[in-house]
Length: 258
Ligand SMILES: *[C@@H]1O[C@H](CO)[C@@H](O)[C@H](O)[C@H]1NC(C)=O
Ligand SMILES: *[C@@H]1O[C@H](CO)[C@@H](O)[C@H](O)[C@H]1NC(C)=O
Ligand SMILES: *[C@@H]1O[C@H](CO)[C@@H](O)[C@H](O)[C@H]1NC(C)=O
Ligand SMILES: *[C@@H]1O[C@H](CO)[C@@H](O)[C@H](O)[C@H]1NC(C)=O
Image 1 (tube, helix red, strand yellow):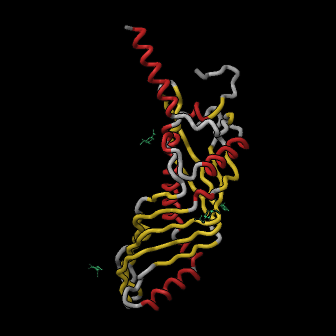
Image 2: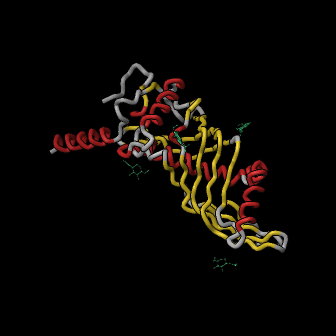
Image 3: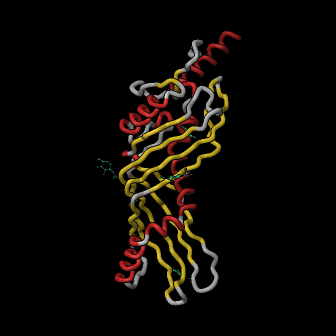
């Protein structure tokens, strides 16, 4: 009976670990080997733009973003504004180049994990709702298709992680992700902003695009919140599904492999 129990436990462990290892063609790195880890990350991105469903690596060519309230000014005085983005999808992360990765040491809690990269063009498409009033004069109450294009999108993010044990293996749990982002240009098109006046819609979009830096600076906080969610959604499930000990090769002489 005891033997049977052990056998079935091993079987479970075996199947469990078989199901959650990265494909063989992806080169495994030693813990903390920054150059190797960066190259492997790039190989993963290049080879699997549609993700690897069996390990929870989600598609990166089409990234769904949760609905976001970008502006929610208090509705007072002559100018108030509400702007939210719905059903947003990001296109272009499959063209990401990772330039630097730090951390991922044998004990991941000791050093800060940092990931840096860039992509030539990030498209952000969905629908928007806008409500507001400009200078007591113009009422805004519109919704429609919105599309943003971020050129030369540079990002980095730092992670704070904990490890948790499952089946005697360590899994990373992210408890904080802090992103930093810069772009060379933000081009936006809000369709139908003034439903009854196409000229005014074009005019407003022109104003926006001519002054995108001000909007970017003004909206930096909610934008960073959006991308915190985006980066988390890309990496969180991999760490949840593939154990940290299976992702990397140990630097210790004692081999922990079964
Ligand atoms: C990966 O983890 C997520 C939860 O983070 C879970 O919903 C999903 O089913 C897992 N996928 C696999 C293949 O284990
Ligand atoms: C990603 O790169 C490919 C190949 O260069 C290109 O065809 C595609 O348009 C790029 N994606 C985006 C969103 O720019
Ligand atoms: C805004 O427009 C929607 C439909 O386009 C309408 O139902 C709603 O009452 C309008 N809100 C205001 C404050 O005018
Ligand atoms: C964010 O990135 C910019 C350059 O891209 C840099 O100047 C700035 O110091 C970074 N901020 C943080 C908090 O890392």
